[in-house]
Image (cartoon, rainbow, N blue to C red; front, side, top):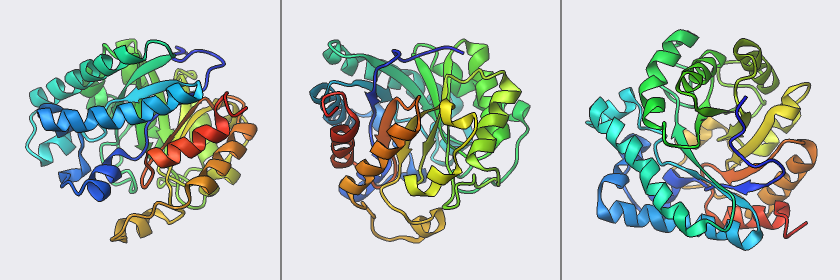
Amino acid sequence: MTKPLQQGVRYLTDSGLETTLVFHDGRDLPAFAAFPLILSPGGRARLRAYYREHADLAMAHGTGFVFETPTWRANTEWGATIGYSQAALDRVNRESVIFLKEIRDDYRAMPTAISGQIGPRGDGYVPGRRMSADEAAAYHAPQIAAFREADMVTALTINTVDEAVGIVEAATMEGLAVVISFTTETDGRLPGGESLAEAIEETDRRTDAAAAYFMVNCAHPRHFVNALGGASVARIGGVRANASMLSHAELDRAERLDTGDPHALAEDYEALARMLPSLQVFGGCCGTDARHVRCIAERVAPVAA
């Protein structure tokens, strides 16, 4: 198990990039993909401002910062839906790491990590076509290989154990530290049916605990807090929660962004930090922005303590 983060250091990360771009900026994001912004000067300028806004919060609150590439949709099938070949995706994934390294140069005074972000093959909310672990490893291997210059790989919104196992295996073959972030429904179960605790423990069992740690994202803390138990409690190292308490189905139908209550969300994060001894990375997902991360930092950062 490779440790990509400094022991004993809390890290912030960013928030809901895609929902910020769509609902706050009014941008059209086909397939909910942010990665094309890397390929234009204007897009890079917007991404630079976004990352700096969040990294500045980490600097102000005495934490580290995890820079996540904007590549959640930059895998083979999702890229193809908006006209990107595998060669073009390889380029954008590599350039995303280089881009974040350039920003990181301005934050040498604090601990940082560059994470190559990957998403599920299908819809994060719906398991869809089931893959074996071997199929998942083969599918995600090209994107993971493009992140070989990153410090780690983080797979967000994963909803089945087989896909998680395959991602861990592919990253291990590349010699990269890997983090698996599961999403849950309102009952604390993955869309694939497993409880959060079962999914973490089964993934560890099948991979000899090769993942650096696990995360939960795209769910509100109150959806999964009661689903934790056993060995899973010690293995959760990060949370990127939704601002909204709506279910995935309700969010899909919503025409307006539900930004929830940033202060109440921060209180939930503080409770999770007391409950989960390995919790180290704090950020946001759908509906969150820098306001939410600021409130979270005020509750969990060393300065607050």
